[in-house]
Length: 273
Image (tube, rainbow, N blue to C red; front, side):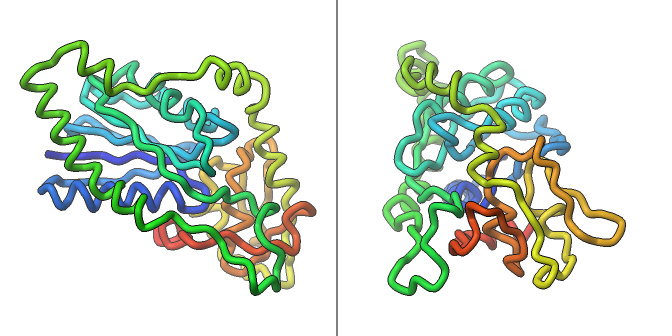
């Protein structure tokens, strides 16, 4: 079986979960391909049998950019499941993913929510605070993610042998009306961008590697000027905090994030791309 795992990730937490899911499907004998969702990228998904679609939760829902990117994709009426990461309050993130993917996909086989520490750099410990540590995705949640492949394949077999409406309703995420109302008021792009602040470059640290523009930023908010310095389009920033946390030289800063530690525990899942 060919499985496609599509995910949005700013600093690598959701990418790490996607990698764990892939390991679980590999163990079940599946062929797996991972796709990181970024503005401007298009994917041909016609050759896959099953989809996993994931995103972090931003203020109880998926980023609005993720909704727009997923609407442009065709899932060819194939079965799917959804997953999200959050700081403990995923809100309607799973339901948001389900709602946008189901337009062109088949049956939903469930959802997985993983606890991952918020990646807002302004909330990280101060630089030099040796007593503080950054929260990691737990070994328990890693095992759950890696075991999910077997669970999803078993559900798919159930559906194929007895495609009842009861099974379908048991597996799809359910929304919270209160969270829908909250998200309608307080999750606009500029509000999320405010969690990162206005970005600046420390030219004494920046080595013009351009990774922030070519690899890290998923929203197309960073370009490279003719003289090699990064330029920020704050009107495209979605507040993923990737550039602030993953710059190898720690050369990108804002007033609210300055003097806080980088959240870079899962940088390899972004920078290796």
